[in-house]
Length: 409
Image 1 (cartoon, rainbow, N blue to C red):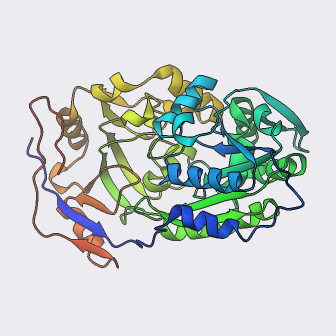
Image 2: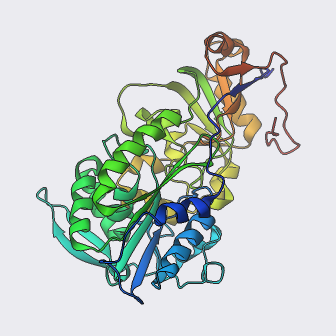
């Protein structure tokens, strides 16, 4: 089958970023007064999640440094719900892959899936919290604020979610997902803030280039307000594909290090995960790889229609299913049709169209990197009037290696 040519598209996103991570944290820390809340030698559980936050190593190192400057005794607690296959060692290994380890941090990492109950909300949801964290004198959560991949609310991913879901471990995360995070996230966070000594939180917003745009040290009484405010900022900078209508979207790779949902539904269409209005309407999604950093967790593969045997061989079903059972979004792991290789998968997708020569198709590296992508000529008219979009008028060919794997453009 003759394959269409592609044209390169680049988007001009905001590039502002924090250059001195440690200096920014120290400067804000000096504005806090902890004299009446802390005593020398007290322990502090630093909650670190599984998300690939930009410069996470520098962030955690800086937080450890400022806590030690107050003669406190910090340690790290994995705060990632069911990730790491819902095991204590698995969660340690997830942190290690992000260079968060005892030898690099100079503090202990205490990992255990044990939780304690903090009672029930009026709707019946029981709130669970990490036993290791609550036994510390204080807790400091670190998290990125961003749109969630499964629900809309005034507070989504951020400090509140780290407290209620991340530090809830597998049991707490699973319980809250049953009741709908949009309904229970804020009440759960409020309950935890009543019962747990939270010293402060570190909230981060990233720019479209996966760099830290904003760092904010937050007092516990301001967690909800700051989560709201920073969510608005995150939406303003959220990178999307500036096309609402495509026949085929090729996604070179998906993975947990790219999005908690494998592929961000805010990019490919939330309707594929939750139903509702088909906006954007990408009718066939073809996924060609699973990142090594996902360690076989292919949650989100259910957002795709077609994939390859190469991807299927990389999936760890046990890990993938544990993630889906915890979140309750079972359709996120429903399997697409696997084809022999990338070339056959693409030809199959084109053959499903009434007129393949008129295909509206785009190719992205992943749902996190959409500042540069490629489209067929039938998409160009939709992009000509887009502000901040630069089109290259020189076409490029799709190329494959001898095994049928697609080559990078």
